Length: 590
Image (cartoon, rainbow, N blue to C red):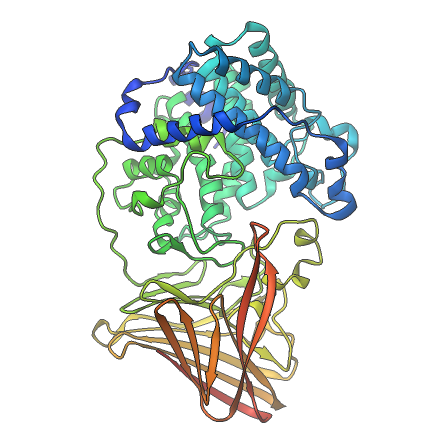
């Protein structure tokens, strides 16, 4: 968008009313009433403010540990959220006022708002220390946005000196650096959630704090460039390949900014009219497979909790949006990063007139991400093509996830613990990111490689064939493996809904005789009897039937998941007994 169009939009609107008072009608809404109960309970538990010390700060460079410093950092943002919301509702409460002022002061006295893991330039090189205090990253912008919204809610109840100091820090750390065209920030060219979170958050700060129309035009022109970069990261199907949590994160901040921009321009600039924005909005429902189980490809997770306010807002924008049951909505303090804007909007965007409807699930092909979703009874099958250079990538082209009667049986393990190594050239030495932790084979004892060149070629997708009883997904995966003598590896997944089974057909062609080891991953124990393997999860049992040319064994791998919990992955490995130039593997799954 050019500056002329942007300035006309700003000139045709009017500044947002800065202060937002609490509406006590919220107290009559059971969901919101419960959120404030949780806040009050937690407020009674909260201890004094622990400051961010150098001994924690330096750990990232010495050991790769991000979490020790971040735990203290997030704990302070938790206090900011708790006491802002509670004082907003009870402005006469002097205890809440004192607590909020102290945490505002403490955050504004932090030497930097960015996190140690993010002190780098576009090329990944360390930036000079003299830039640390005004470095703008994900969490600096989140912090700035949280502070300005805390002022919107509570400034009339705060001491003037405290509120002034917050404003001074917002101008110094957010407004002035971003207005300076000589400063370049790597998030401005990152085609993922960074462009949206940083651009969206700082855009909201500017809309609320900048009064001069020309200055705001310059500021938002740069913001809109970031949002455009974010939208470019999606295919026309609107899928965020990073996972549902990153969909919520990136798109949540996009929606906050688009909402403010629409309001500030009197509806003249309405990003929700963009067809791609609509497709992104419709994709939350695709991630949710059954109950709160979600697609966990890449750095995703297999159990989601969605933001209710964001989802209700999107439902008002697009009637096709479907919400999971309210039982799977996040509570106000459930986000371990305590993202202020999304928690606040669970309250102010709650729709009292919303009519809950049962979700309608149907098989779906998402061509941009190359995701194949097949729904039947008793199976839900999700498979992917894609490439191994995606954002938050795992080496998993051709992998799949399988649920039986709503229970996960063959799984994608999702994200591991975020450390310095996790986002370094050692990423694919970590078990969860390697292809050996996914439902894809080893070929000549080799795994898939990382990089965009290692990609699947989709050969065929059929949904609802044979009177709606058969879904088929076929890919060529030769390019995903560094096996010189491999001429072809074609994988076909057939979901036969009439016979209630999944048929996996893998066909390998080599220049000379080669070896193959099929692998299937689950969190549930696996047993072997003859040529069959059995996976048992609760009352559900999944049977995988092989022919006698394969030797079956069960392996175990212990790993640390994203929440730093030790887990065990059970791996069924089916090794072809003899080398062959042509290998055809047919596995029936019931």
